[in-house]
Length: 421
Image (cartoon, rainbow, N blue to C red; front, top):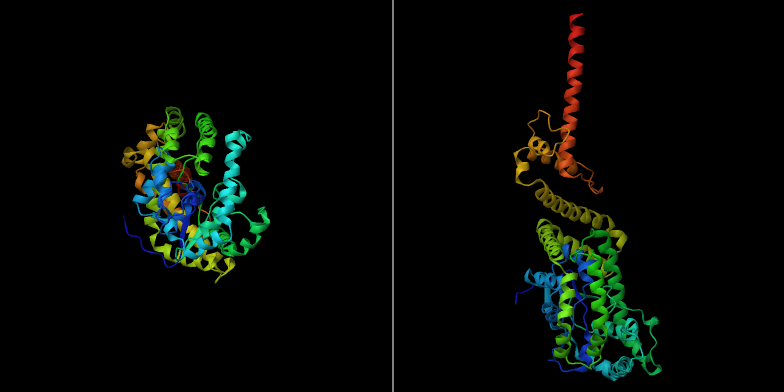
């Protein structure tokens, strides 16, 4: 396993199915769960600033065995050192686990799971209405904050199974009310998570690693997989189903057929392109990451207000956004223009029967691209860059050059007449 250097500024750890450890509380127990795919959409941009994110090794092992695009992305992030697996179960402090037992929260969770399982096995709840109760999601967050990782912010993101819930939204039994005082750490983490998101919203442009499912066929297949998997998944979560049995069920032919419709070759290709952009932009902006981490960590820890560093965060965003758009634009340029474009803009435009193709110009593609970059870089720092499509830019350059030439040609006869008068 690769060695990871701890950032002195800021680390983030992803939540997972920690509730599964309730069925087996042995410190060495391995329990398969999962990782929040929501991070690959809502949180992926944070990898443009963070050195890496931490995840549960058991959760990652579940993801790594699946045929999904999200699996592929997590595996690549791990290989690149951007995803750091940890046995989160071994990171619990003894005091945290003892308090969960002493307050009766673990016993209460077991009773809640048993009641939910009875509803499933009796058919008392429709498949469409199955969901993890808010009280168990809350407890999962409480267990999450009990993990001891220095300098690591426990952030739940927004996926339904892992979302950080307000204590006021829970309906705990009377005998559990005293346990609420034991979860003030959860409130502190929630405040810090809110600060983190506010800072990242300013410092980071929009960026996703997981491509959306755009086809109706893919969306329908996903809906059918979720519907058909729900009962078995919750039976597994509530301890009524061994993982090998659940895995055999999930690996059946019909699930595989629909998986291929959801995560087709195009979606895998888009994910690879997104990963390549991420890696290249990280390389291009490596020098600003320590500063960005320092400023954001100060906001998260409350030593600086968001308003105090807002201008600096906006400048960081501009640098990252510029690198991101330049990388994306360069890729588009290579794809659409191809190697032949390097022979000259005039030849490229001529092959497309462009109206300015007949212009007698020697400006090469490289020269036009140089002018394009100069115009972008001359914009005032901090202003949003609105770049034109490179080929259209070249056409614009030639159009302006032609107009200038026509003006000169119109002026030349007039000047001759006046000189001869």
